[in-house]
Length: 94
Image (cartoon, rainbow, N blue to C red; front, side):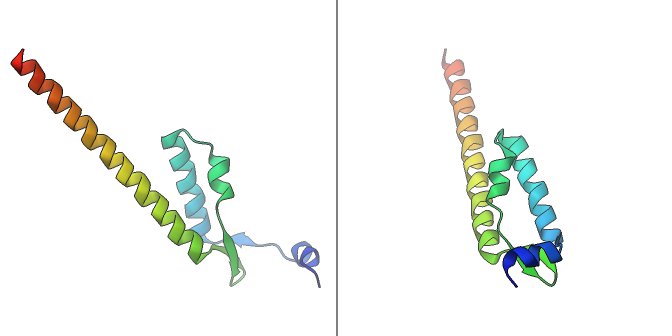
């Protein structure tokens, strides 16, 4: 039986982790102004107990991307705070 026959014979549902990932990717797209379609194309799934689940590799890579994004956001906030602080100091000297 080839893959096309298997696809025609069986239908698969998303597991909760895939549904949560789709929701997260939609939220990221809204927050960053990026195209959600590009984010969804990166999702990798595997068949697990009759449902499509995220692959372990995808989970690891996705967590790394989220951590990088949070680090970048923290740097932006810190640089903005530093810039605002510098402006306040400069205004006090004038």
